[in-house]
Length: 249
Image 1: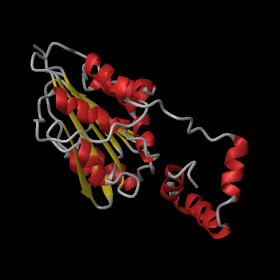
Image 2 (image 1 turned 120 degrees about the vertical axis):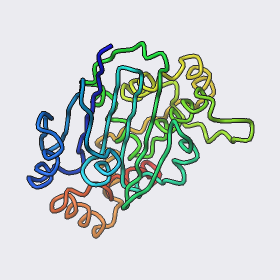
Image 3 (image 1 turned 90 degrees about the horizontal axis):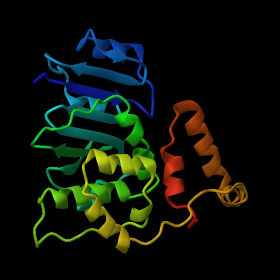
Image 4 (image 1 turned 90 degrees about the vertical axis):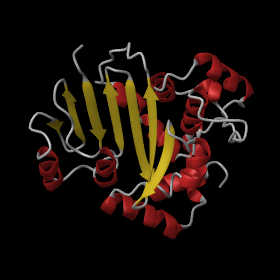
């Protein structure tokens, strides 16, 4: 049987510079490399880079897919937005795990189909799941809970393991979380049981009137710092930290 391996990396928080793109090109003459991505597939050769190192240095999301049934997804966020200690309550095994490096929390999901019966093309799959990263940044823990369900299904857990808090909205998964559940091959019956016990997701959308009132309560120095960070450094982390507290503030 022919071999097929697909690799895709995406940079979200900042674009790659010319030097960084040159460094990546040294690993492959065939890959499609842009200021925000590295994409390549292999039928006979193999990837020469280091996924974990690249996630630390260049990228915020990674997808790997092989025709023998292996699926891997990695999402990286600033540790200020995703507490590694909380993430480990859900993703602390082999099929879903978290590690912290250089101020980043890097979440990894691994799904294996031992029969290797699937032959999915990789193109488009990462884009269908990548919004899960923004949801995590806003404090939505449902992506972590899907990792825990995947560990349950993979029989990583035993009677001594304590179930982490069940987030609201398991029965109202976004399109990105639905794609993540499918990518991890989470059993739909298992997901349905969790959904039955999960509280409905409250309305977290910012209406214009509510948003203006909320912004009006912020200190002027705080608002000025946010604007400067966004203008000069494209640093959205302080803003996302504020949004994690919406609508409590």
